[in-house]
Length: 172
Image (tube, rainbow, N blue to C red; front, side):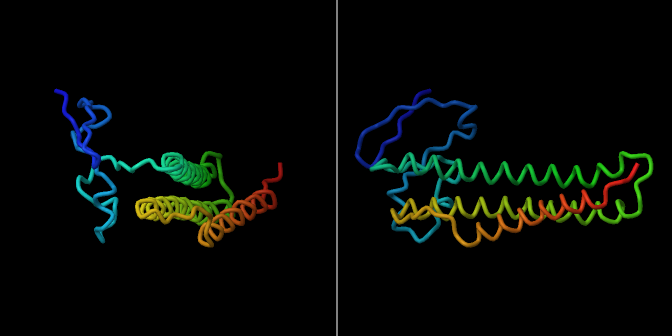
């Protein structure tokens, strides 16, 4: 059941089929073979194959850092979606929510849900753009103005909702 994958240098690297790691038994895509293509590297054949980069200088470290950055954006997106659901649901666990709480729960939850989707989209597009630049050996890793705008909006929404919660707290 062992097969081999030949690389551009001509050597064969044996690997075994593992249904957990590679459930559809796809072969890896060698990035150096697809650099000349105008097609995006993530859309190259095989679609579900791993991308194999030539590890010159610090490429492996940079790819791992790019993946960790995407996972950080994913984690922030999940936190914001949990906050959105908590805001919408928490006002309905009490016996009788006030009219202000009923009016403010859904819009505030939708705002946090949209911020969650924005974080997910920003993280994904940063990841895809950086992988494409890595494949062309032209990546400059830095935060752009879009990332700074998203983080500023998220911080403002969190600060504003904290002020809103403190100012509209129910008096016992």
